[in-house]
Image: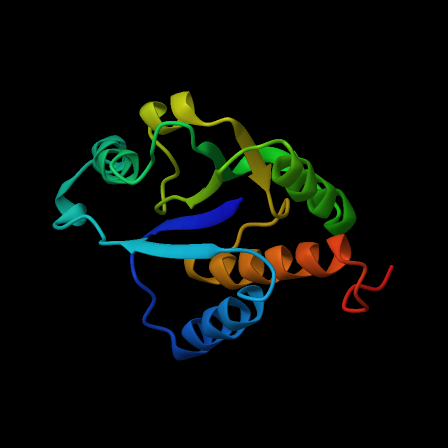
Length: 157
């Protein structure tokens, strides 16, 4: 199985970029992983929130392939402990799914078109994080899940 993280917008914060690079480097030993940053929508200040979500959705849909298992990182999604999330990943690994695509949307969430193709929704916390910071948190949780699956000493209960 391959994991892809699809996000809207690039990060300009050096500490976030360094965190992403750190965990991408670690994950290459566990699972094929692809990270794709899509460009921000131009002139978004002149758009309604709904129009911006629709345009972002169109960009996202171009990066989803038939057969992908699509998982939205969404505040209304299911909450997991780290062990439960590792189990979630492991079940998909053994199920025959070729690629799981996790998506972090823009600042206003997802369009209805994106919700309609989603297989699952996951929440990383009941708290709200910036879309930039969520990237590092998610990368760390994927890495943690891989170490749990392999019974390595990174995670402590």
